[in-house]
Image (cartoon, rainbow, N blue to C red):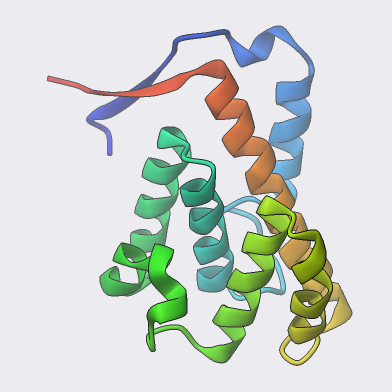
Length: 154
């Protein structure tokens, strides 16, 4: 990935304090953070948010991170169709459904999806999943707003 750089086509995010606050959040629940939630699941959630909020920066970064964490390439390739797959465990499916409902905020569907999470996760782990998804939504929107555009070098 060293052959890809990103050009901010709209604004420099470092012009406001918010970017630094977002970076602090990423240290807590971003892709390099140590958490109770299994690393591969957390990475699938990040990548799914990047799909839903089509952020080029996040898609490139989190696809590479998914591969680096050893997630099977077929799972990465068809994460968008996880509901039609047998590659995702019941735990992953519960978390992905919750992730999608929180990202798109499905008012009617959110409560049952939260309840389904309680079959697979502790209350603290559910809070961590929510934090992962919320943090990714923040980053996708920040990168979209600043116009982080990928460029191939050479």
